[in-house]
Length: 67
Image 1 (cartoon, one colour):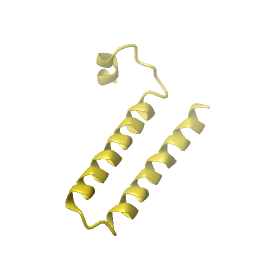
Image 2: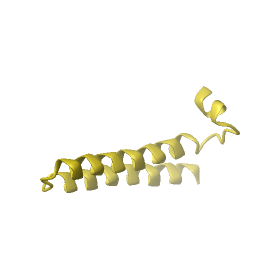
Image 3: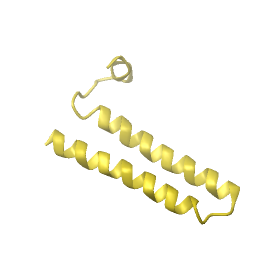
């Protein structure tokens, strides 16, 4: 089950990148581009943190940093 979750999370991360670039290409507003990049990087950051916790569930944030 963990392997399936890793595949799904990886696919979601790739989809977020494609959506980000699809939105950035036609966008003319600099502020809109900045916000789009910020939101997509935040979503990818959350997905990456979840991906790193799939195998081992750390009890605290310090344990997660030590992994």
